[in-house]
Amino acid sequence: MGQIKITKIKSTIDRPKNQKLTMEALGLNKINSSVVKDATPQILGMVRVVAHLVKVEEVK
View 1 (spheres, rainbow, N blue to C red):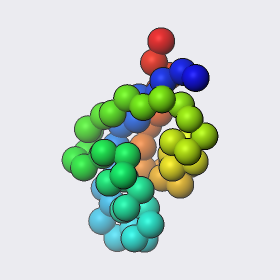
View 2 (view 1 turned 180 degrees about the vertical axis):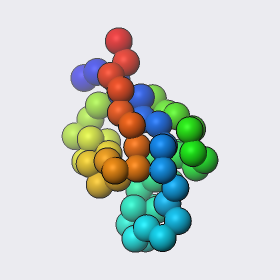
View 3 (view 1 turned 135 degrees about the vertical axis):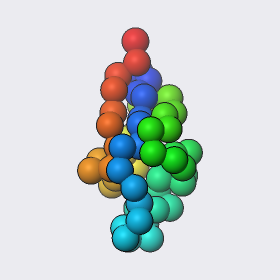
View 4 (view 1 turned 60 degrees about the vertical axis):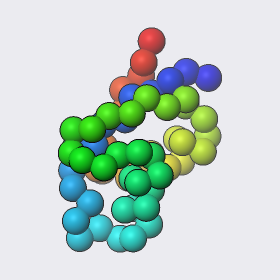
């Protein structure tokens, strides 16, 4: 499994509760905050839910 860097690029204001909770579970609070996570199926599924709010990059 590789790693991915997830960066929050849009606000969660006026978003459904499940998207807000997903962002919180990923550890993304403020805009432009980033986290590095293993690319597991669970994390990739969470990223898919909020794909329009984040930027994803592969970490080498």
